[in-house]
Length: 342
Image 1: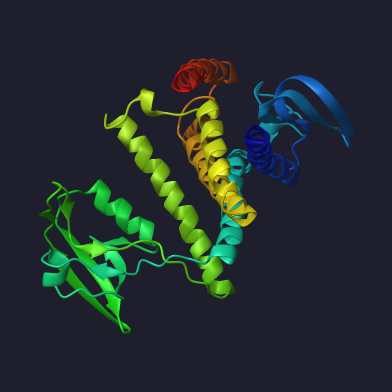
Image 2: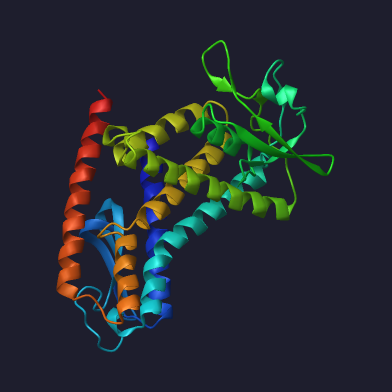
């Protein structure tokens, strides 16, 4: 069952991503030759109004093939015949649709579970928060100037800035206060400021549901960016990355544990996985790496600045090299995932 759920989840997320490219291409008058889900040989296809809709053998991946997308063709209806801004909107639409999907999934989660404001649940005796006068029930608004909306953002921030002084801006009875806290080391050798903050879910109206759904997506985008920073500065390595096999394993474990509780827990946790994966895919696709949407946007930005397009053959070779590197990385990560299973 977990494999089926994983395949359906991956397929839907990728399909929604490609739908973004497809809709903006149609909106801008670009001819879409094929809109497909999956990779490899076609299993089924149907042509409608000049576009071939295909289902392919391998469920991971998808494509929206546009006329003249890579050849530099500037004929009528081709990708290259449109303005730079129109082409940028088409390319950016895929990742943006991932964020939109993450938002809609978050709406279902928060409508069912409620939202988790950054409210202090308790104060630890003898630590900076108590000394500064913070109390249970205070709502944290900022940490060192960074806006905070949900309880997990507090935990994440303090984890990322262990041992650093933190200026806490908080609200109590409608009034806003500020306190500078110097973390202390506890008996376990951990730096703490002495607050107990964890998710306590509250139901709200439609405005709060929509607002906290946006905060949820923001949280996962920031979490993904933090993971990328850890990879680039050496705090994490390629061995810490996980690919489709690892994600399927996590989904399987989540499903197994959730089904022991209730089908509602399965629904909520699968939606949480969908938010995480969709936000992650959106961020990763916007990275300025050749072959990804972000890499293609870089070339369009260069074209916008210099007033003419980079030669298509040069751009094509660069994207091909990027694709080859990504495939090698994917194989390596999948190999690691498989080895972890044994």
